[in-house]
Length: 251
Image (cartoon, rainbow, N blue to C red; front, side, top):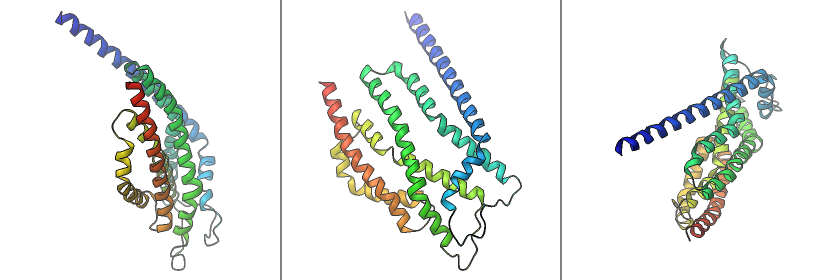
């Protein structure tokens, strides 16, 4: 009997490992394919990323610079990889959902299928917020601060690194309501607990604002902190809904 049970466990483990390898292989192929396509259009992508830095009279040139021989091709490859991962995100999430779905209940699968496209959409909205709302004033501050003493010269590697970091973290920050809803749905947090810790969330929002923004300008930090606070409050509302759904499903 023990031998049969052990054999079944071995077969299950082998099946899960094979399934994991297959989904990782497909995910890697999709990421590589999207990265190659992004590299083909890296000039157009870089031109889009450079838009917030244009239009300032004190900049004596129209293009960013690079000071090392391999800097531009290195940043083009880094940019292509990041864009390839972002573009592959829906497929990667789908592979993750399909891998874990056999161990979930039907109700849990339903919410997982709903939250997956919503999380991708929210991530895109957060990145767009960083691009259109947050990054332009940050660039203006960095270009004008001290411009009477020194001439600003934008290195392409530094600029793209800051831009990608900001877009990524703003996309992650906008996931806060969805994360809080999911945590409330599984019973880890409650709306009462979140409301009781609101003041710490506000402090954390301003700390994140200082970390995410590339400037010391308090205005730009507030532009990050305020949406985080609003998203946290929205997350409290969604957590109430998650708790109600969990209570009704238990009954």
